[in-house]
Structure formats: structure tokens, C-alpha cells
Amino acid sequence: MAKSLKKLRKHLHLDRDQAWFFGVCAGLANYWRVDPAFVRVGAVLGGLFMTKLAIAIYLVVWLVLDNRANVEPMN
Image (cartoon, rainbow, N blue to C red; front, top):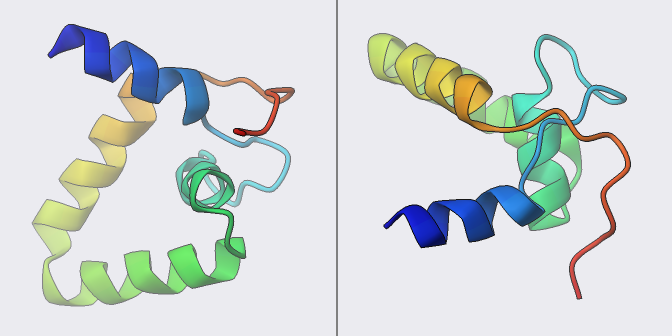
């Protein structure tokens, strides 16, 4: 389990360059190669219907991921 988390953290990171708060949505958008606005809208909609769960997931992701601004894109 720890091996897969290390592999995921190698490619998934916080993006402070395009961040609004902590860079979680921008980092996920970079990982999925979509516009950060789509991820932010999804986070807001999730927060409207599942507020406590959305906040908990956001905070856990923020604490787990590294802040690496200059990461090479995935191949």
C-alpha cells in the first residue's frame, strides 16, 4: 500500500502557481490534464452536497501531497 502511495505522490502534487487556496484542485487538474476550473467546480458541488466529507478529503489531500512546482509531466 505504501508503495502505491509513493508512486502516486511522484506524479500528483500541489500546484501553488495556479492555486486559489492550497493548490489541491490545481494539482489534481494537472494530474488529470484538465482545466483547474473544472476540478474547482466539482469540489464546490461536492462541498454543497457533502460538506464535511469534502472538507475532510480536501484537508487530507493537502496534508499528504508535496508542494513541487517544477515537476516533469507524466509520459
